[in-house]
Length: 491
Image 1 (cartoon, rainbow, N blue to C red):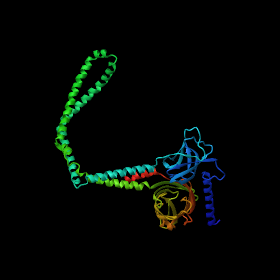
Image 2: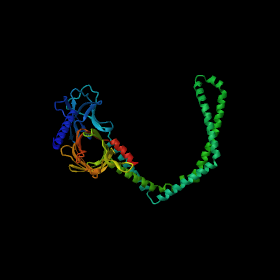
Image 3: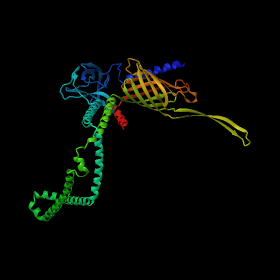
Image 4: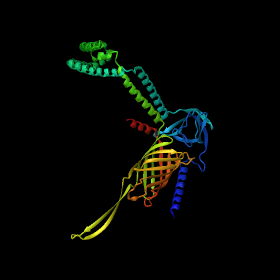
């Protein structure tokens, strides 16, 4: 069998496998499916929903989305419900998602009515809080903060601001020096005050349990308690008087300091009573305003950016091993993307070394002469970092492919909504041992939601290394990872 026949047979087998998997997923019913009846709901937005999206109740699948249409500026969602499922009256439709992956589906919250929902009925809906709603709120808060900083800047934005900031810094330095002097001069007084507080708290710790117990018994045995514990009450009163004296002494210190501050004495007094205080806040507020402007612009741009995570595994038929890819796609708009990949390859960089061995006798004559060739592999873990731009039905990418410079070209046929693509990638144009550039041809088809199949040929220009492969993978949008990526970039 010639090469053309082998390639044709391989793609026929791949297409048969794809068709079989599509039918097995339940997306197509070729022999007739379950009996269903239809209901509908009107949503503000059907973002994340498409035909065949699951309809669930209490986490159990009870149907699928039949069709999504536009009606009066809103989304009319028509659902097929299995005929053996009865929906109580008052049931409500709500759009939710499956955990962190963000795969959306329709949840029907059962009502409490005695009757059941009839076929072709339109159910009421309940609005769900999405990540986009949260980002909108954050954007609104940032805008309000921006207005506040603008207002403060206009109020204090005079040339006296620099002088005010300088005076504040000098005042803070003077406050620190005065506090150091006050602490040094009143070290003994502070020590006495601390000792008094310790003694006071020690007395309270001893007396509070006794007083509490006495007050409880006082309600029923007032006369006997007073008679038996007269001495204890006397000691308590004496301790209370001593504590009051200590507290009065402490308050005298506080009053003295407050009086000095009120009269404008010392650094703290000048700081509180000086009318020129706060003149140097303008520069600080302007810097804060600029930071908030940058944060607002960043949130506005980042809210529309999509971050997609992906994983695929390709089985190499010749080496009988798998090649795995972990992918992160950053998509700022529909025409451009940035992609980073980590690849675990079953075969690394091939290197061929030739060694010549000459064995001689003691007299210098040659006893044996042979050549040894050693072929080794290394660097099985590789990475890719590319930038892609779409032009019509073609997608061009350039950058690092499997740790080497390269480029790629993909064709996305019309009518498949991006589910089908044909790609050729080329890289490593200066391979060792005068090998031709590494060229890979493959086709990819998204057969069910986030899952896709891929098939093709690798290293097609080198017959000694070329081989066919077949793989499966998943690619999904993850807004939670986008938030983590945003936090890392800000830091």
